[in-house]
Length: 217
Image: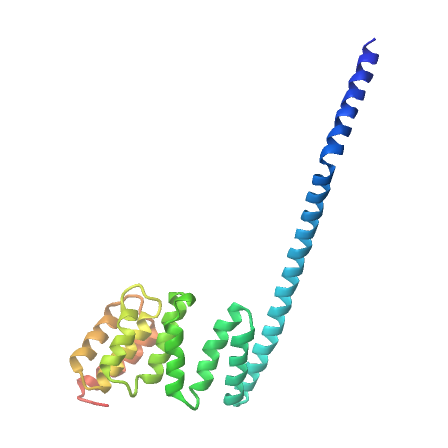
């Protein structure tokens, strides 16, 4: 007798499932199609991104090769093209490399390119600080101390990633502009920072010796 009831229950369940399928099958099939289509679209996007990165990587290596051959104008143009066509990561690197190539013949234009990078908040503070340092390296021999301080004083503060280089450039600029008080102040900042690299300490020792001996730029 229990077998009969069991068979009835099974028949009822099958009938209920059939009604549910008849009612919702189109939605189930549509959902399955959307899932498959979504996975296919994502895989296609990943492939597209990988292809773009591969093309950008090859173009970047070709531009770097031009630079290594001393063809700086061609390299600068090649990096500039990458900036307009490549994915974001390569664009940032290419902007820095284009500025570096420009510095070989047109340092003032290169400094302006680095200034543009330093002002681009989308890059993040580390990249911006690096760009400001690169501009400072180009200008340290010619810019007034006030200009160098405007550029680099914020980067010389404790905790900034490139503070050691910023302080060294500021000390050198102050010395070249014959501001001995400012020179000594920046040298003191370098000397009292426990994290100052040994190579930086060696260079400022030379500058300190020049000051002690009465040397000038």
